Image (cartoon, rainbow, N blue to C red; front, top):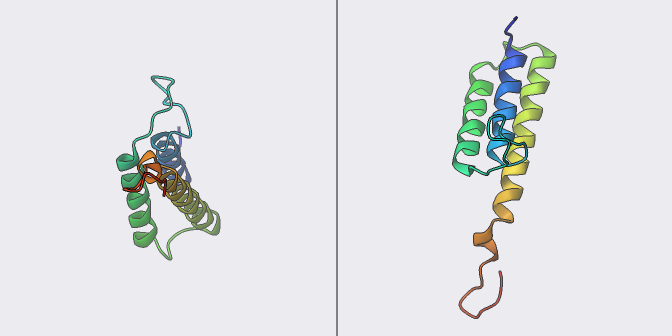
Length: 95
């Protein structure tokens, strides 16, 4: 089995979307959210992006950029629709 940079990015992409509850966990078969882990994966990919700048092929660069963008957008969307953001305020109205 050949391991390359794109395969590493795809592995982290899968792990990130699993942590966001978008993909079922491969072992349990359940979809569970772990926003702390999702944030860790996003930060890890951002470090990879920074440290590999100028050393990637066009396709690797595009895959990394797209993966980071998609994970970040999904993370933000989840944070905006989290139960905490839908709690009533002191007047009893939802925010």
